[in-house]
Length: 217
Ligand code: 5GP
Image (cartoon, rainbow, N blue to C red):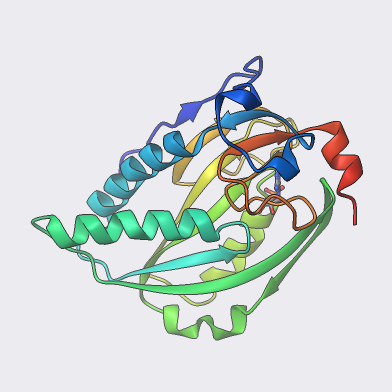
């Protein structure tokens, strides 16, 4: 598999102003700007799906979704892979599974990652699988998860993450498939939450200081 590049959003990019797109009224004061509109996310996912299908060959492929933040990306990516499967010369045999992790409270890492549901993963043994992750920040969560999953002896593990943050706190971990590399800001929307808020926001937005204050537990 060739290493793939991704779309890099520069540090000085301020995003789109809120009145250029539609966002729910109840979030108007809680986000600063729109970093990645939903349409661009959709188009980028289409290409990630194509890259994955080319690399996986016939599979079998297990798509493992990291809940909750990964559900939107997971659903959209699996949907695109299904479309390619139905219409292409070759097809990939696919199944899905779900796990949950807990690592963040407010906008700071707690330093601990709890994997919930990993003892059900023995069915993954011998299969090629791809996880879908919403965002890689330091990479600590992903490293820990990969350690755990290796115990199930999958034929191959590849990680697809919609977002990777450019941060000095990075462990150096890079997923195999990346949608966008983004500045070191706290983002919400497209299923990415802040204390469970913003999962109902379509676009990926930068949270405002007001939003952080208003939406504390
Ligand atoms: P890491 O272990 O890579 O530092 O953190 C990964 C996890 O932290 C993600 O799965 C996500 O739950 C959370 N996270 C990190 N940065 C952000 C962010 O900008 N926005 C949101 N909503 N969650 C984030």
